[in-house]
Length: 269
Ligand SMILES: [Fe+2]
Ligand SMILES: [Fe+2]
Image (tube, rainbow, N blue to C red):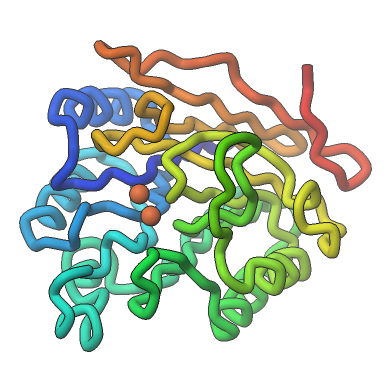
């Protein structure tokens, strides 16, 4: 049994200090095996924003696996955007764009989907990242739960206006399918939901779950309270418990539980 705290879209620079303090306390109490951060750690990729994000992550007392989001690339500083888009991210958060965590039960690979070329903030997977997915995850035994973490979504939200999905998502999912991936953790939409990639990507035959996280601590809300996901991995069962901010504290909602039978993840009542 492993637990992952999935936090996303922190947007330091636009954070709510009270929620930051509460989340830090919560996560220290949860003591997850891993904290997965699915991008947008900062609002404008400023130095002081990265410093605040780093200090927050260091204070959690758990291993961290993070990927950058579109906001972690400078927008207005064009020289930095073009020539060293992720220099500060690399300096303050992770030197590696595609970090990897593995233990006896769990393998987690981060994929940087943030790109400097798109002012709209859309993301994309590269061909070399598809190769990394295969190389890192395919050789590992099926007994491990295999997880990908990326900023940009692979699945549309179940309601609301249409949003761009990650570029080359279908090819990325084919690599994930070949590598035996069970679960994708994503952000960017500032809305939380769960699903299976096959509801949208009909070419994918493998049942791969998606857990999308809301914005953990930022004031950039899109019709939903701040939240984070606490994920329990206990094959053949997975569960996702959204912890939603009620104005004073994070309150756990009813867990969404999945059971894998006949190679399919099915939602349990
Ligand atoms: Fe965001
Ligand atoms: Fe984003």
